[in-house]
Length: 164
Image 1 (tube, rainbow, N blue to C red):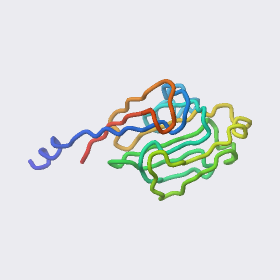
Image 2 (cartoon, helix red, strand yellow):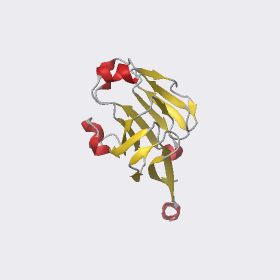
Image 3 (cartoon, rainbow, N blue to C red):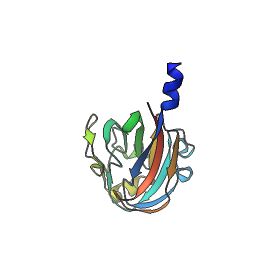
Image 4 (cartoon, rainbow, N blue to C red):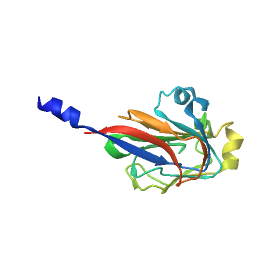
């Protein structure tokens, strides 16, 4: 009986993510990576970048970073995960053009620099630099925002999780 009371007392928590880079945001289904566009890696939004600096979309802890620096995962409130993945087939760059400014285990605040991009170098190697912002691990639903986004200012994605 106590478990029933506990489960009904759970509240929904809204988690807002600001745009990690300036650009134009679109539905995730338009991303060129099938595992991303089909939602297999999480719910989210895609942004075609205009800037060259990716910042933390919220406070959290870096839990994973690709060896090529094109992908970062961070744990945020309530155990939810945020993943930022740059480009389609970015592994073929061997990390050239992606400069990481964080380490695994590091605590970051919203707007801290995560990755700096050498756009000229990257565009010579891969055809699409579309950036996916994904939420997973307990996310019940997301509400993406589409259109022109300013890095660190505009809310690009809102997720909802249950508070335990």
